[in-house]
Amino acid sequence: MTAESAIRVQGIEKSFKKLAVLRGVDFDVAPGSIFALLGSNGAGKTTLVRILSTLLKADAGTATVCGFDVATQPGEVRESISLTGQFAAVDEVLTGRENLMLVARLRHLKNPGAIADGLLARFSLAEAGNRRAATYSGGMRRRLDIAMSLIGTPPIIFLDEPTSGLDPQARIEVWQTIRQLAGQGTTVLLTTQYLDEAEQLADRIAILHKGTIIQNGTLAELKKLLPAAQVEYVEKQPSLEDVFLALVGDTGESDDTDSAATAPVGKDLR
Image (tube, rainbow, N blue to C red; front, side):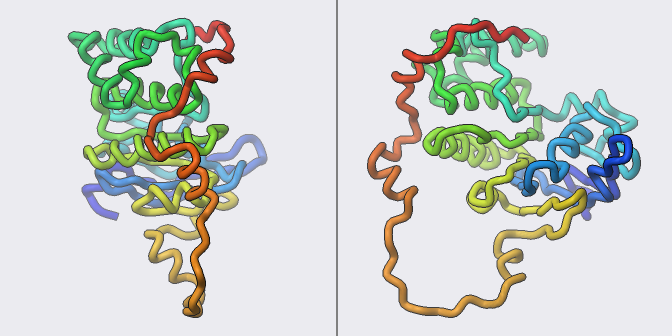
């Protein structure tokens, strides 16, 4: 572990009554990288994210975020991070632009309208900015949710299973957004149970199993854990992803007409 780590986790333990969820977790995350925490349901991924974002206290061990201790300096940690949970936390009564302006005002930032317009353009939501979030597709809501998380330019963002429940095209949209974040210098800690998601996005992958990290490395390093593949000539067939993108068009934009027509108009107040 290095002094320059954006996130450092050492010996973190957490139990709920007699259930040990985290049993001594260790890893660090380099600044500006995408770090994937891969594990099945119940592995402890969300619990660890809640500890790192100061929403939950660990029973043992230490963790620092941007050099601040999550236990003794929670205020400084919260100023350095943003958290996007498993479900999009947008207000469906408000428009996309109003959601962004609301968060900007809560953060006491100047020119909330300009901030909202910039993020709408950045996340390809400008044309839908004045529509109620209830009319957005799943991918658009998730992009709006991530855009809201970036207000105030936090150096670190936690994405807890950001594509859970999304359709294939919406997942690809979110993947593109995550790559853009890392490309612009944001450190991303991503939890996922999807193997392809970790493979597509992560600079480093840690596998969390039964409360401990059983392996941690780059994709190439993890692949070396298995015997070398036997080289044979194989005629490559198109994958399902190739077929899907060929049929719907690889534009990075979702066709939200249907979702706009069928989305419920219920209230979702914070």
